[in-house]
Length: 169
Image 1 (cartoon, rainbow, N blue to C red):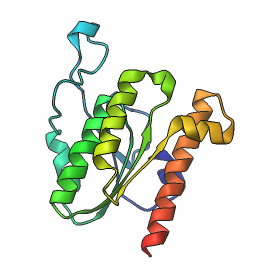
Image 2 (cartoon, one colour; image 1 turned 135 degrees about the horizontal axis):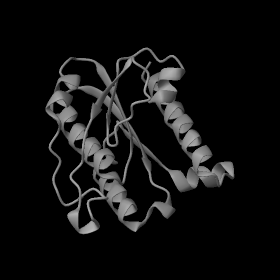
Image 3 (cartoon, rainbow, N blue to C red; image 1 turned 60 degrees about the vertical axis):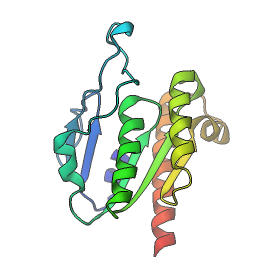
Image 4 (cartoon, rainbow, N blue to C red; image 1 turned 90 degrees about the vertical axis):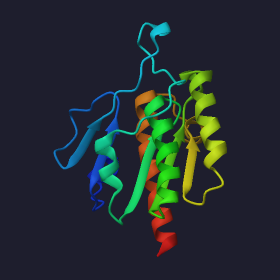
C-alpha cells in the first residue's frame, strides 16, 4: 500500500492491520485490528481457529460505490481472514474490487502456507483475485534477502495492479 501511495496512485487509503503501524503517512487511515491470540502459544500467535469479526469501523470503508483494491499477505490471521471476508462481502454487494495477495515464503512455516493455500484455492476462480508466490518471485530475481524480498513483493503488487487497471481501460 505504501508503494502505491509513494508512486502517486490517487486514492483513499485505509490500512487494516495487526500490529499497529504508527509510521504511516497522515493521508493513510489506519484501523488497528487486534487478532485473537492463541493462549496455548502464550498469546504470541494469532488463533486461526477463531472466526473473523470484521471491525465495526472497517465496514464504513466499503460503504460507497468506489473501486476497491485489497492488498494482503496471506497466511496470517488478519491478511487471510480479512481478504476472505471482504472478497465474499464485496462480491455479494456488487462492489467493484480486486484483490492482490502474496503467498508466504516457505521459511514462514507450513501453517502459514496451509492457510494461504486454502484461501488461494477458495478464491482463485474469482476473476478479480490475483496472487503470486513470494518464493517464486525471489527465485525469479535471484534474491535471498528478506527485506529486499518484501520490496520486490510490493513492486510486484504494484505491477499487477497497473496491468489489471490498464486491461480494464
